[in-house]
Length: 147
Image 1 (tube, rainbow, N blue to C red):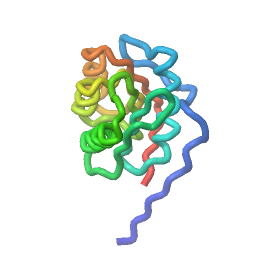
Image 2: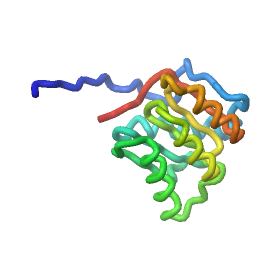
Image 3: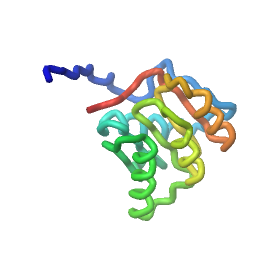
């Protein structure tokens, strides 16, 4: 219909300098290293990307789903199918969570920290979900949404 989607490449590297902690609990040093690693990977996964990482290793990824919660589910299923323990892993999302359900699901699986761009009108709900689960959450201020 004559439409065009343009996109600039993401800057190289890990977490951008403007990344900030938005939860009561800050990530541990190990979690922060894994969050940086997960963010680097997430930038290369297609739309509605969710990446699970632990010990600087990809353990699950979900992408191309119509909803972010479905991508979370796919990443958890893939991690389990490959025999990875999700408890203590971190999660990166290429775009904000439109609802808290993704954070709740990640928390119930044992994910300990999350990085996402922020920017949803419901950010407070996602942050509250993370705080309620004693998860750390970082906002990058940048989307990494790739089509």
